[in-house]
Image (tube, rainbow over all chains, first blue to last red; front, side, top):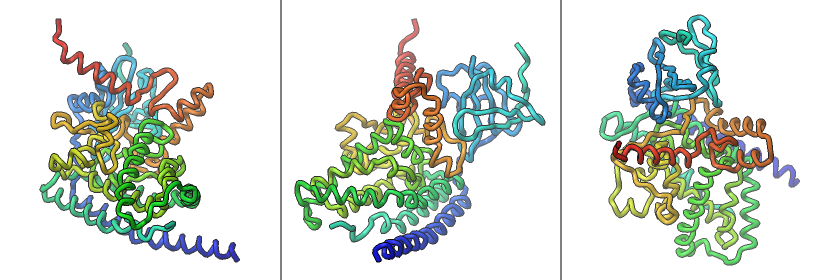
Length: 139
Length: 305
C-alpha cells in the first residue's frame, strides 16, 4: 500500500506540473509574440570598420587592432590584433565577440567564398562569414 | 509547520505576466526604456517556465534535510509570531547575500547561476531566466541554519519566495532611481543594473536580495554611475539563444577543463576557484579584469611626461 500511495502521489504531482506548465507555456508564447510585435529590439545596423572597432573595444579594451575585414552583409567582422584574431558577430539585436590565435584564423579554410572559422567556447563552434578582402595577402 | 500554506511565487505569476505586458507597452509607447528581442525573451521565459522540472530531482532531499535540521532546532519560532517574520526577513536576506556571492565567486556555483546573467538585455523577462541546476549544487544547504535556529520549513520557504518575488521588479531599465532613502536601504533597479553589468567597474558587485545594506556592510556595493552605462551580459557573451546552451554551457566548459587537468590541484581550482581561473593565468577572472581596468584608468589620468 505505501508503494501504491507513493506512486499515486507522484502521478498527481506530474499531472499538477503539466497542468501548471500548459497555461504558463501559452502565456510565454503570447508574451514573446507581443514582444516581437512591439518591435523593441535595439537597432543593429550593418557593421562598418569604426563600429566594429568600438564593439571589439568593449570586449578587448587592450587590443591594438591592426586590420579589420568586414562581412559582406555587415553581420560580422574579423580583426587582427598582433598574434590574436578577434571575431565579432551579430546575435539577435546584440553583438558577440570571440578571440582565437591569428595563425588559426589565417589557416582556416575558405569554401564557397565562406571562411570556416573554428571558434573557442561552447557555442557557436563554427562561424562561416563571407569576408571582403579575405584571405589576407601573405606578409 | 512543515508545509507552507501558500507559495508566494505561484501567487505572483499573474503579476509577473501583467508587469511584463506593462513594460512592453510602456516601451512601445516610448514612455519608458524597454528593449526586447523576441528570441532572447523566449529563452528567458522558457528558462523560468521549466525551472521547476529539474528541481524535482532534489525537492525531496531538500525538504527532508530542512525538516531534519528543524527537528534538531535550538529554539522554536512560532509561525504566527510577528517577530519571527521580522527576524527571518533579515536572516534569510543575509543568507541570500552569502548564496549569491558564492554563486559569483566560485565556479561550481557560478555554473549554476551564470544562465541568469547570460542575456544581453535587462528587462523583466531577464528576471525569470532562472537556474536549472541550482539545487543540484547544494546551495540550499546555506538555508539549513535557519531551520536549526528554529524557523519552520514553511516559514523559510515562504520568505525565500517573498525574496524571489521582490527581486522580479528590479530587473528593469524602465525605472530610473527610487527616492534616496529607498536606494540607501533596498535593492533597486539601479543597484541591480550594476549587478548585471559586465563593465569591469561593476563586476561582482551588489549581491543583495532585498536589502542593499549587506553589500555596503561587506564592501561589495557599487552605485550606478550616470557616466558609465551598464553593458549587460557576460564577459564573453553566449552566441546562442538555445536554452540547453544557456542552461549547460558552463558545465560543458568545466567538463572540458577537468578533462585537461593535470593534477588534483588543477581539478580543485577549476571547480572551486573563481570563474576564469586557469593554470597559466591566461584567462580572465573578475579580479584580473578589474585590476587591468584600474591600471588603464590610472594610466589615462596620469599626465604624459
